[in-house]
Length: 237
Image (tube, rainbow, N blue to C red):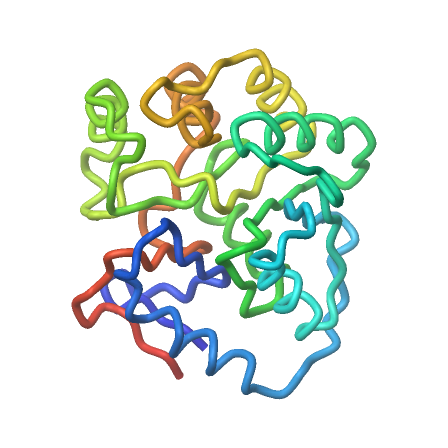
């Protein structure tokens, strides 16, 4: 349904990240997907899909995409008032991981992301293209915009020939055993002062100590962030 023309890849997760309006591809992709025929895909037996939703009216587009494909997902955070991403997202993920028995776990934001294809493709791409334990989506912008994050992530992206260079925590896939370690460390860290409510600063701190076990999807093989993507780089089919 979606092709990245820069890399000739077909990402299966689309994420319209950020509180801004610079997402010209979001509505066409979303409308095309939800206007397609519903499917009944079986959730891979070795994968648990999670999202985070406290019941706020702005949440739930990811779950709608899951339902459109006939899949199952685990929803974390129902009923939590005064939600803070930097507290609740790492904490609830860490707690859930203690009881997840599947080999792989995939986490995707509820408010502004959709799954548009069979998640088995994501597992297959993870195993084919990445020699690591956890992959986050890659973004055009470094946020929180700390120089130390940018310097490190630019260094990691050297030779990748991609403008998608910076960690975005809106989508990830990883090996469950390793993710228990990663999110166990995440709950020990404080968010950065420049973005105290954001979980992303926490995960970007960990990226510096956990690389190369943690890597980014530089070529949008699995995940496509569409914020600030303005040029003709995506094709909807």
